[in-house]
Image 1 (cartoon, rainbow, N blue to C red):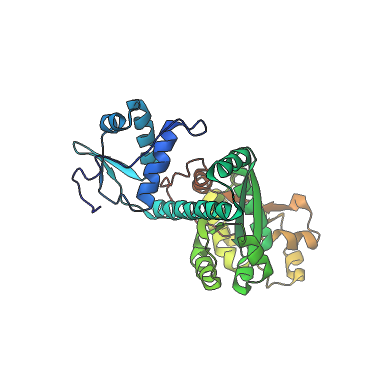
Image 2 (tube, rainbow, N blue to C red):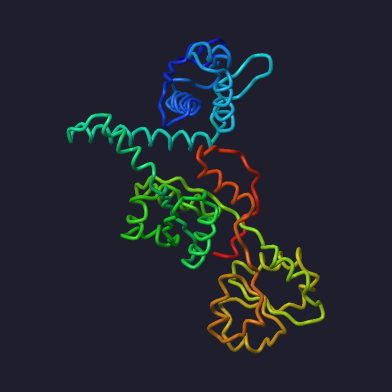
Length: 347
């Protein structure tokens, strides 16, 4: 079938029936999605109207309309005023979804091939799948950051965004782990497909995984200052003394955060990094140590009391939370979302 805006898909090769486990509209979604992701239907191919497809299949037009709405939400089809409904051009998110869907189809084919080899028929496979469908859904995934502590923090936050009833199985790695490879990496990717990392680390992670021959969809996440941390910064007394403690690469970002969320005179703030000896940190003797996530353990080890510390606490941005929740929704619809700031103070 060639791309065109003609009536190239007036009769779709679809089969719907009384499958008690899959509603009719989902049967349509699954089959049309499969036709698109396997390139039987390609960009600009015209789909039959709702009424025409309903007549073809002998089902209610409302059922077809519901299926078309879901496919539209997934970015696979689009409506063109006065012309009808067409297969949409796949954007990056839709292409990644199509790739995962094709991988699923291959896994299903291998399952049936194995069942044949073991002497079981399709009905036995169907019965086994129905039984397994009742189990709690598992979601293994990898979070890769500069430090293991940061990976563990964001793994918890990614897990919090998973749909209810889904069991998170996070593997926490550092970017150095990916660079070295080894057993921990192989163990993680034996089951995990998704890798979450800060958006600015995506090219590094993708390149290394490609070198290792590991197939993974790397998802760039962003972070934002928590409302509680922003409120604490706004409440700081400009007359008090402060010391900003951060890794050298994060000092400028920390100052930027203070400039946007506090009334402090940045010129009066003492700046310290991991390169400064502990004596210098003690000698600063501020009223309050403002620090990044990475600097927190160092201050704790030195015995700086908690009431003299304020962490620039970051969490997943609203954009990242939306991306994660939609990524693991029942339809995995690839909805475009606006990019937020890629803050890496937590790394």
